[in-house]
Image 1 (cartoon, rainbow, N blue to C red):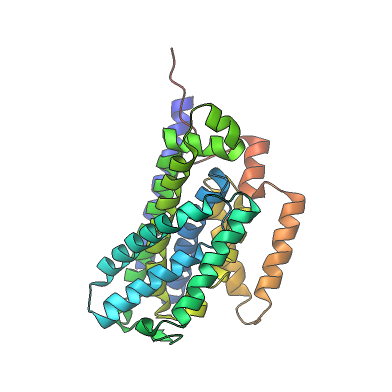
Image 2: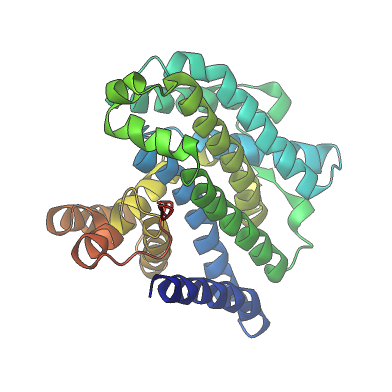
Length: 318
């Protein structure tokens, strides 16, 4: 029975992936644009959920790595003619190194102080880039190197990033590091007593999230095709990730997927109502927190036990 259930879930996942791969063949450019956004926000939300939902490190500053990834893509590809995909990878590496550099400071904080500390770093980068001559100060950069790319190419790039982010989270959580992260989230002191190395475990998780956020930032600005400090390091990126995870279900693999789809749909519906989308998103978030504090997928799991991408490893039979 258990094997049958597992096979059914694998089949469902394979069908979903195949559907997303072949969908562009019949889809319009508008549909491809919507799907691209869903994939990118899904990837962002998975990384935010990895930190906040599974490791207990609630961050308000992940936009720092979105901006760094976007600017690396822009400067390298536009000014120096570097291949656009190589630029994205270099941006991800830079983000990981930057995360490593700031980790000694922010890891001394916890809870709300960690959240505020990460947000301050992102704001500092915003100010720095706005006053940095090398990037043209607060100049609006047009990323003309992506103009020749088709909607399908942008979509498939976003899809690969989304699948990669999901697989990384899924595989990581099923390792000893993943178990250690969840132990730290539940009780850092108890985890330390059990032999978990708090700093090294959190650092591994943070490095992965920083690298992937840089990758996602590059892919995002391939789609956007322009960047400036106020948009690159905007708190709106974190608002979107937080909304998607809270609505979908914090600490669930499926939550960011459901939440990201809902976020993009709501934003598109509210597109012509300037300034109203954040208000509507806020109201929806409050209602969901009051009615289903575990989010959509978290509530479904608690009531029915339904879960597609379980982070738990099977216990071997004696």
